[in-house]
Length: 62
View 1 (cartoon, rainbow, N blue to C red):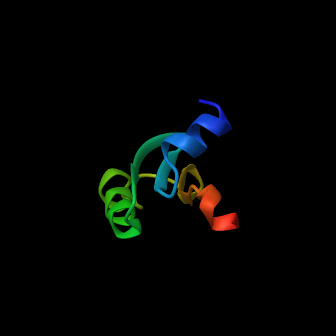
View 2 (view 1 turned 90 degrees about the horizontal axis):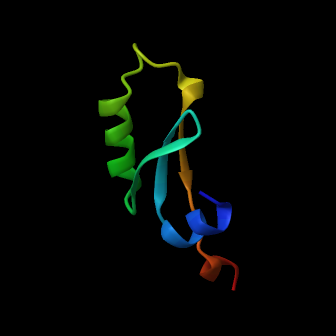
């Protein structure tokens, strides 16, 4: 998926990424943190494969 498409589709949301692939998304960061703990327990997955990122809204810069 292109950067532009991601920005529009997930605008203002938190993304849970595993190996640079989007596996889930939510407007609530607490939900994403819970999902990360549930889907990717620390004892089974290296930290460098799991990322949480916020898609910034264009409105933020206006």
